[in-house]
Image (cartoon, rainbow, N blue to C red; front, side, top):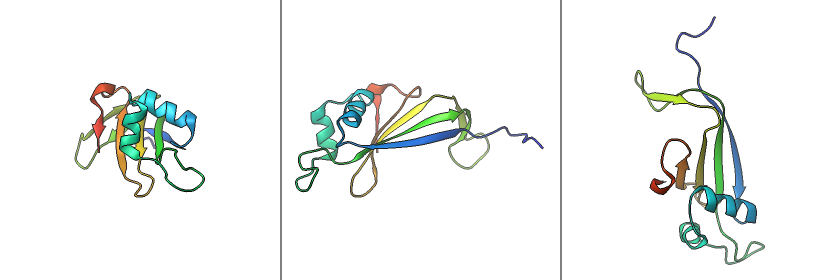
Length: 115
């Protein structure tokens, strides 16, 4: 039996370390940051095999199947999420907390949200 309320969106989560040059360039391009701003957010490793490289990781969620995205409890609390939308977030290397993020198609990249 088909649900009367519709269906939820589905997404795929991908992650890469900022110590990788490709992921660093992707983060700078998508979040509209310079290398200095990125370094100020996450810092650099001072010891070990990644010495001098940026800490943290970039996580992005790509919507593979559009549908209703629920934001909390209550009727009508959410919006329709389109297929192909992508969210980008920088994650702290030690705590796993979200430091910085941007959602394509929902906000202007120059008005990004800090967590």
